[in-house]
Image (cartoon, rainbow, N blue to C red; front, side, top):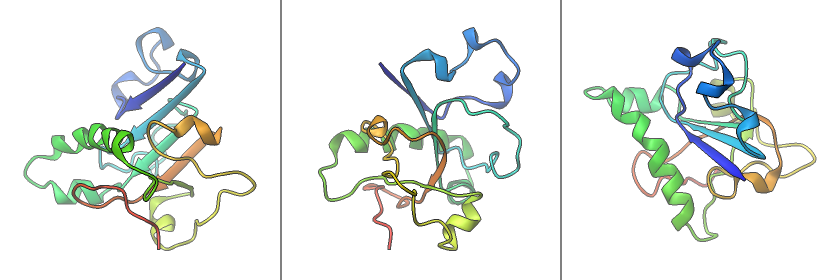
Length: 148
């Protein structure tokens, strides 16, 4: 079984029992889509992964786009996931490992080494990758953006 966490809560559930929060032991593969806009990972606030694969989109960028209603950025994870169900093979949400999103934007992170890079959403388990990955999306649907 695969469980996909769509903007799973972090700060309020840190240091809580695994029975009350998403955890890698909840399924054979747990992936998380983070679109909440705050670069918590870049600040080092969360030390442990919630899932085997964590894909973070547009930290700060979504936050800045949604100046009047910041909370709606959490709903983007749902839209991204739904788009992965609808997309044909012309665009995939491919994510890349990187130390920070800033480094990713500079073009410093363009490879996943020996294996395939993880794909956000429905097909995330196919890469069998673990760790933190970044990707950038379009600001409106279709959200999938081919990397240049």
